[in-house]
Image 1 (spheres, helix red, strand yellow):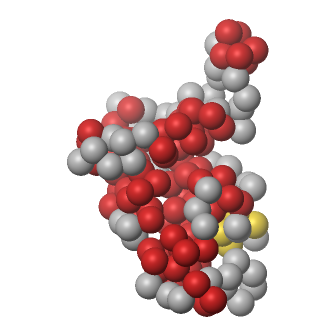
Image 2 (image 1 turned 135 degrees about the vertical axis):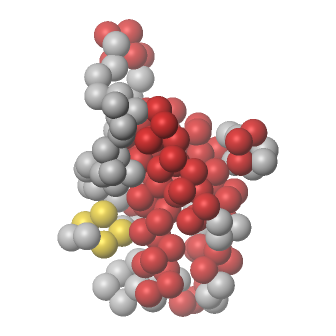
Image 3 (image 1 turned 90 degrees about the vertical axis):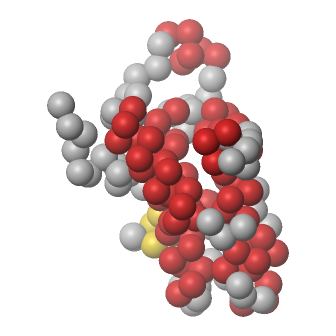
Length: 139
Protein backbone atom coordinates (compact mmCIF):
# COMPACT_ATOMS: atom_id res chain seq x y z
CA UNK A 1 0.00 0.00 0.00
CA UNK A 2 1.31 3.44 -0.96
CA UNK A 3 1.44 6.09 1.77
CA UNK A 4 -1.13 8.85 1.62
CA UNK A 5 -0.10 12.07 -0.08
CA UNK A 6 -1.20 13.76 3.11
CA UNK A 7 1.21 11.86 5.37
CA UNK A 8 3.74 14.67 4.98
CA UNK A 9 1.41 17.14 6.71
CA UNK A 10 1.00 17.04 10.51
CA UNK A 11 -2.38 16.04 11.88
CA UNK A 12 -2.26 18.18 15.04
CA UNK A 13 -0.57 21.57 15.05
CA UNK A 14 -1.08 22.83 18.60
CA UNK A 15 0.77 24.16 20.57
CA UNK A 16 3.28 25.01 17.86
CA UNK A 17 0.76 26.76 15.59
CA UNK A 18 -2.15 29.02 16.46
CA UNK A 19 -4.76 30.09 13.90
CA UNK A 20 -2.54 28.66 11.16
CA UNK A 21 0.50 30.71 12.19
CA UNK A 22 3.65 29.41 13.85
CA UNK A 23 4.24 30.37 17.48
CA UNK A 24 7.29 31.00 19.65
CA UNK A 25 6.63 27.56 21.23
CA UNK A 26 8.68 26.16 18.33
CA UNK A 27 11.88 28.01 19.21
CA UNK A 28 11.22 27.51 22.92
CA UNK A 29 10.93 23.72 22.54
CA UNK A 30 14.10 23.53 20.43
CA UNK A 31 16.00 25.96 22.66
CA UNK A 32 16.79 28.36 19.82
CA UNK A 33 17.84 31.85 20.92
CA UNK A 34 16.92 34.88 18.80
CA UNK A 35 20.50 35.13 17.50
CA UNK A 36 20.17 31.67 15.91
CA UNK A 37 16.82 32.64 14.35
CA UNK A 38 18.40 35.86 13.08
CA UNK A 39 21.35 33.98 11.57
CA UNK A 40 19.11 31.38 9.90
CA UNK A 41 16.80 34.03 8.44
CA UNK A 42 19.56 36.55 7.64
CA UNK A 43 17.92 39.26 9.74
CA UNK A 44 19.23 41.37 12.58
CA UNK A 45 18.46 40.09 16.07
CA UNK A 46 16.30 43.17 16.67
CA UNK A 47 14.10 42.28 13.68
CA UNK A 48 13.24 38.82 15.01
CA UNK A 49 9.83 38.76 16.62
CA UNK A 50 7.06 36.20 17.05
CA UNK A 51 3.93 38.33 17.30
CA UNK A 52 1.41 39.52 14.70
CA UNK A 53 4.12 41.75 13.17
CA UNK A 54 6.49 38.82 12.61
CA UNK A 55 8.55 39.42 9.44
CA UNK A 56 7.47 37.22 6.52
CA UNK A 57 10.90 35.57 6.30
CA UNK A 58 10.69 34.58 9.98
CA UNK A 59 7.15 33.26 9.55
CA UNK A 60 8.13 31.21 6.52
CA UNK A 61 11.23 29.83 8.28
CA UNK A 62 9.27 29.13 11.46
CA UNK A 63 6.53 27.37 9.50
CA UNK A 64 9.07 24.97 7.99
CA UNK A 65 10.72 24.39 11.38
CA UNK A 66 7.35 23.95 13.09
CA UNK A 67 6.06 21.53 10.48
CA UNK A 68 9.23 19.47 10.86
CA UNK A 69 8.91 19.56 14.63
CA UNK A 70 5.27 18.47 14.62
CA UNK A 71 5.95 15.58 12.24
CA UNK A 72 8.73 14.32 14.53
CA UNK A 73 6.50 14.81 17.60
CA UNK A 74 3.77 12.75 15.91
CA UNK A 75 6.24 10.01 15.06
CA UNK A 76 7.74 9.65 18.55
CA UNK A 77 4.70 10.78 20.56
CA UNK A 78 7.15 11.72 23.29
CA UNK A 79 8.75 15.07 24.16
CA UNK A 80 12.06 13.65 25.41
CA UNK A 81 12.58 11.44 22.36
CA UNK A 82 11.69 14.30 20.04
CA UNK A 83 14.15 16.66 21.72
CA UNK A 84 16.84 13.97 21.68
CA UNK A 85 16.28 13.34 17.95
CA UNK A 86 16.75 17.04 17.18
CA UNK A 87 19.93 17.26 19.30
CA UNK A 88 21.65 14.05 18.15
CA UNK A 89 23.98 14.09 15.14
CA UNK A 90 22.34 12.05 12.38
CA UNK A 91 24.48 10.04 9.93
CA UNK A 92 21.77 10.41 7.28
CA UNK A 93 22.19 14.19 7.54
CA UNK A 94 25.94 14.09 7.13
CA UNK A 95 26.57 13.69 10.85
CA UNK A 96 24.83 16.98 11.66
CA UNK A 97 22.19 17.27 14.37
CA UNK A 98 18.80 18.38 13.00
CA UNK A 99 18.78 21.43 15.29
CA UNK A 100 22.13 22.49 13.80
CA UNK A 101 20.65 22.23 10.30
CA UNK A 102 17.90 24.55 11.50
CA UNK A 103 20.46 27.02 12.88
CA UNK A 104 22.26 26.96 9.53
CA UNK A 105 19.05 27.81 7.68
CA UNK A 106 18.71 24.33 6.09
CA UNK A 107 15.10 23.99 7.22
CA UNK A 108 13.62 23.07 3.83
CA UNK A 109 16.15 20.26 3.38
CA UNK A 110 15.42 18.96 6.89
CA UNK A 111 11.66 19.17 6.31
CA UNK A 112 12.00 17.20 3.05
CA UNK A 113 14.12 14.59 4.86
CA UNK A 114 11.52 14.17 7.63
CA UNK A 115 8.60 14.07 5.18
CA UNK A 116 10.34 11.36 3.17
CA UNK A 117 11.14 9.40 6.33
CA UNK A 118 7.50 9.61 7.48
CA UNK A 119 6.28 8.40 4.09
CA UNK A 120 8.80 5.54 3.97
CA UNK A 121 8.19 4.42 7.57
CA UNK A 122 4.42 4.54 7.46
CA UNK A 123 2.06 6.43 9.72
CA UNK A 124 3.26 7.76 13.07
CA UNK A 125 2.83 5.62 16.15
CA UNK A 126 -0.51 6.31 17.72
CA UNK A 127 -0.20 4.24 20.87
CA UNK A 128 2.75 3.61 23.14
CA UNK A 129 3.21 0.38 25.02
CA UNK A 130 2.23 0.23 28.68
CA UNK A 131 5.91 0.42 29.69
CA UNK A 132 6.45 3.57 27.62
CA UNK A 133 3.32 5.21 29.03
CA UNK A 134 4.62 4.81 32.57
CA UNK A 135 8.24 5.70 31.86
CA UNK A 136 8.00 8.63 29.49
CA UNK A 137 6.27 11.97 29.16
CA UNK A 138 4.19 12.23 25.95
CA UNK A 139 3.70 15.60 24.34
